[in-house]
Structures are given as structure tokens and as C-alpha cells.
Image (cartoon, rainbow, N blue to C red; front, side):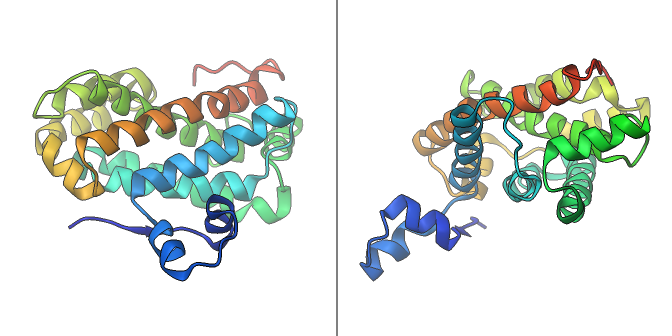
Length: 231
């Protein structure tokens, strides 16, 4: 079954220039999962680039964008079920903390001051795991676009090995690799995402490009405090 997401009123107004035509607005308001994700991360990327990397990025806005990515994990089936569950859990924890901390910088600073950056369940650790999930989807998209293989096993296995496998236990890695055989085919994935080859390529490239500044921003929250990234 294909998936359609409704765009928020603010995003619709921005993209449509606040036009009043009901039919055109309704048509533009229908986004596929990929286009919704691309839009959200382009918004984040534009904020970061416009205000420099010292900008205090709003935690709730970040979590709202990240929550859209969970649908993409769901389209990949059982192979990425653990990654999906971990990702969704961490995004929800960060979202719950947004009222108290306000920005990503405040959340990491709190843990830095309390020496809990790498502690299980800390916001800084949760943010690292969410960042890895975003990077996993980016790597999968890059592999998808660089190949025309009917099956996604190679693209997904390579993406997982590059981004998440180094931080998962042997048991989790084994389960993930075993599940690669249950991945949808290329055509099945496009159907689930309600995309054609051409539209998927366009939206995946938008996400890949938009994610770069966001990843750099997150990494700088740690490196600027002399916190290594290999964990």
C-alpha cells in the first residue's frame, strides 16, 4: 500500500506562497514520505546555513523532522526493525525533553556539565543514535542511486555496515544481516514510498544534500566540547 503524508499548514503556506486556490493547495499539500522528509530537512539545513553553525537549533523542530524518517525505516521491513525501534524511541525521548531544554545545544551542554554525555538514556547519547539513524538512511539512498540492482540487500548491507554496525552488539548485527533477505525489492520499495524511479531519485538527492549541514551541526555539538564521535 502506498503512503501519503499531509503537509503542515505552515509548510503548505510557505510552498504555495499563501495562495488561496483550494484545489491547488489541496494537491500541493499531499506529500509522499520521501518528499515530506526532504522538505523538513531542507528547512533545517536552510536555518543552519543562514544562521551559521553556532545557531541554537530548536529541539522540537529537529524532532518533528526526524519523526518523519521513521516511516522510511518501516518501509524496509524486518531487517531494520531493531534500527527503527531504537530510532523511534530516541526521537521520542528527545521530543519529550524539548519543553525543558529548548535546543539541541542546551541538551548536550546539560550532559556535558553533569558528565553524562555517554551515559545510557542521556539526551546526548540519544542524539548520537538518532544521528546514526539519519546517516543510515542517507547511506542507503546513496547506494540505491548508485546501483540499478533489483534487490536491496547489497545497498542496505553496505549502508548498515558503514553507519550503525560498529556500534551494535554482535547479536544485533547478526539479526540485522539475517533479515536482509526479507528486504523489499527495488520496485516494492518504490511502490511503498509512492514514488517512481525518477521522483525517488529527486527526493533522495534532496535529502542527501540537506542532511550534510545537519550532520555537521550535530557533530560540532560534541567536537566543540572535545567529545569524540566514535561511540
